[in-house]
Image (tube, rainbow, N blue to C red; front, side, top):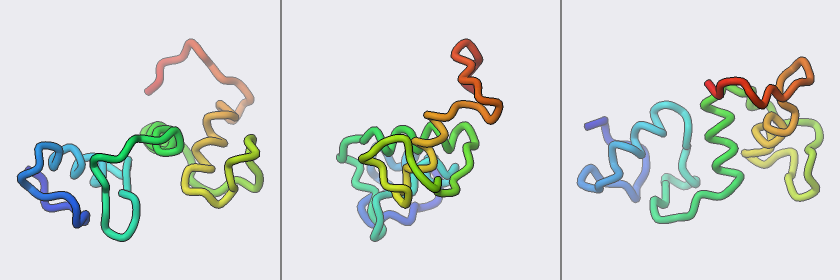
Length: 100
């Protein structure tokens, strides 16, 4: 088993403990703040695109603007939303390319 996580609502006896530790230690998920992970919460679209962006190594600098009116430039997920919308630096999306 992994070392204890920084989350107050996760215990070593929980069936998901190792998975939570893994996603935290690999920088894919950071919890919801205030030392909590909230394992029973729903995964939002913002959370999901953040995980995908982090897996792909997308830059996490906040964009100066966003492609969507309901995405604030300072939201934790904003750089990953922008990454997903923009595709590659050369202006292509490459829909047939391998994910990773």
